[in-house]
Length: 625
Image 1 (cartoon, rainbow, N blue to C red):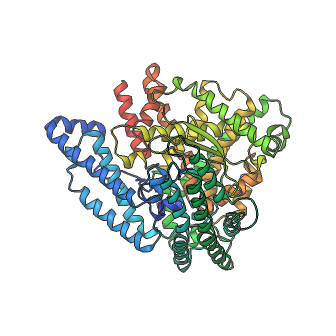
Image 2: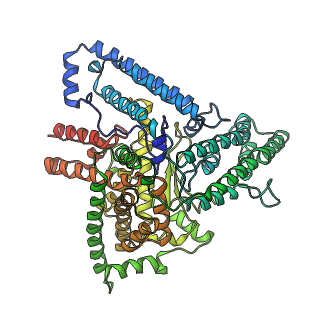
Image 3: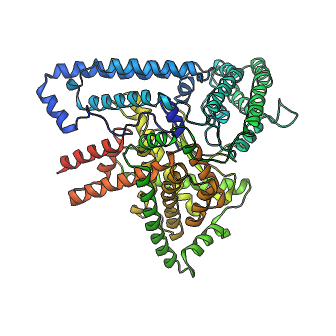
């Protein structure tokens, strides 16, 4: 799961994906072939001048947008505005709309007909991004800013722990400043919740216990009570210890104690009252919540969901078409699972085999630190082994490193099964593959391979680190994204290692299929909840009836569908398109097909809408011919 964007809109928050996700690139979308012809007919100096003008504009738009987003600055590893949080106010949302309208008007002053091919592509992508942002302003309230998946209540803590690096005294002071600024931030958060409440956009009842529990967890321990240091105090103290041990400009004991005192005060006088106020507000709001789960309950919810599907999948597929694709994929994968069942000579039908895979102790490590450490160690080993096979599949490889990490205790009960966070802009902070080890019964060993390949290598780390390291493309493309492309690549990356002999253990291959089956079920359940008025319980039952996953997996997944409408449809739709393009290229090129060249063509432009990916692959095939 990803959530990084240089311009944040309400719809992007709702689907946890890039806001610059066109379904079509519009009437200005010229193919690479025709654009090359244009370049031949215009003086090179005119093309160079207009292309420079465009790229300078792209850079200005990105940097100006970034400068208004302190959290994303930190996420990229930059040190500006380190003591601040994003502005959640309605006034700021309106101002961002004005900026986007101005940028779109300024973009039209660039003569697209005089741009070189790569710059013309960037022009089209930015234009559609801005048009979508402007159009989606009407949906700015159509999300839940506190929820069990990515709520602000946990997001601020995750950013402080994982992205706010302390390599100087000023960094530590900025950390304390951010602690003090949590109170005004949460006041804005409560105002935004109230605005949604007035629009009858209230989270379903199941959301509240998760958010309230996680919020309470964050104000346990010192200095809030007499227990062990709280989550944030422990993090700040650890970072000060590392700063004290630095050879260059070590932190004096006096300054260290001063910073610790300031942090304790900020936690007690800002963080604690902020969380208590939020908890009280949510506790009261919970009394009005219902068990209606789909966005159909919102005003114009069906229209919103159609837009969300287009942004997420970058296709024109309807909810009904996506639902049917899911049903067909579930049936196909069930057949492949039956073949594995027969291969291992299991006596029973597929339902019994799934129950065996779900319940047998041989497929799970014990709860407790030893089992968790073993899981992390073996996941790391799988990724390291895959690194040694990359030359067989790829030409370009990322420079940034990758680390495997367990989800932090304060949010592990609510967080998803696994996810990835990209490296810092300069690569000094590695990419992170998070494994949620709260319930080891939801992390079977036969799924370990597929998870590691999806979140790590050759999956999200391969794609997103390469994206950031690309040369010659504007930053809005380096740090933006399209969910169907990103998650489609992640799911494709689960399948790819099988083609070089991995998943040799049939149970592990079953795990790969189980992961793919999970994504096929998502197409069925997401559309079922939001267009067919399925209940939470119906969604859970569909997963438990059709997959070998634990009930806890099904509960978390359905709850994710509910608070992130459309997002989970991206995986299978994106994977199916990549495989379709690959098979078409193989059939046309025969022995001349090079899998390494195909993957390079997919990755070398950064994330793109699926229809644009298809045009690039078509042009690549013609070039090979």
